[in-house]
Image 1: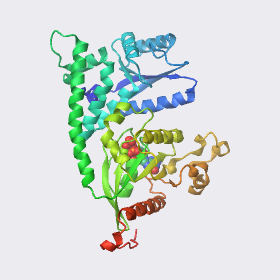
Image 2: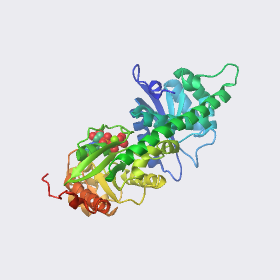
Image 3: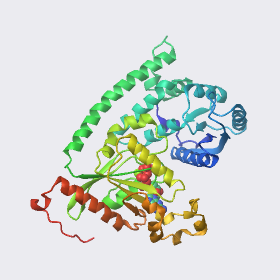
Image 4: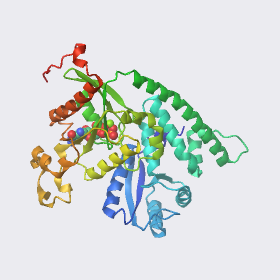
Length: 411
Ligand SMILES: Nc1nc2c(ncn2[C@@H]2O[C@H](COP(=O)(O)OP(=O)(O)OP(=O)(O)O)[C@@H](O)[C@H]2O)c(=O)[nH]1
Ligand SMILES: [Mg+2]
């Protein structure tokens, strides 16, 4: 398999990139700038340093070279004077765009948004299942795009796609090899998926609570707080790619709490397809804890992205608690609508103010917390517990007769 870790290795020297995005009528320049910040964060996660960003206002991206000719020349001039390792585009590129850009930039790598996200997933995958899921998604991404870049990369990695028979045309051979590999991975993944379905079935039929949300909002930090689980949390995107499940007891009622992969704007569709089994955890949830990073200037857009992704995977319309996290660093001046509050320092935005704000009306169950500082966790626990209890007694109406007593345990 093409080893993205090797590709973006930071061992010798930090790789550098320039980022490119186009602003359209639908995507004003402020949005574009913010998306570029996210793209730079994605690059950082892979150890790639952004040295410059380029944006251009266009009706729509150019079908041949994404940006227009003038901007392309500007980019070429820049990279001639300041050599970089790659050019990263904030949208997905078509095969012909990749081809044209590769020709223009010659030795410099051309990377698009999906490729970047796939590389991060490849770096983060821990279990055999998620490794297979990512590899499948990578090959599915690669198949329609088999271009010079890929043949070049595959030769470097020296495995998988690189093994071609002599005398055949490279691209055709690559296509066949990739196709075979996809079929092989699908079959292997199906077996692993079956095992995880069995594993899920074997778990007690306990109430299942799944933590969902945009990437880097604090899902794993919350999981640690609620389940005392030793899960990995980091200020990087997609720290979590595999799911972690823990059994939690609240007042003698057990339930399962799952931390899982985060979502992002334009999550590559092949990742959603390949991660079907991981996302089944979300689909099979009884209750969702949707965590939102309220300190992020675009938290409302993130909320929409997550809701849309939940719809896409068939997990909408579940009982949900909307958990606004990171209230300790929330700065309301980010909200353009709240101009009067522009100068209110962070500390003065009290929990009470948040509860009275329009944000509190965003769902039936809304809780404001700081997972890191353990602020207002009790309110979250109470809300969650009453929902878990209701569901639990609908599954086990005779729970109390089974010898379990619902005593109030001390915190
Ligand atoms: N200030 C502040 N930071 C927080 C809070 N909760 C989490 N963080 C930080 O936010 C970053 C991301 O936290 P994670 O728990 O890894 O987030 P996640 O949603 O699991 O992220 P992914 O697995 O990458 O999708 C870490 O640096 C945390 O320390 C909070 O309440 N306040
Ligand atoms: Mg996480």
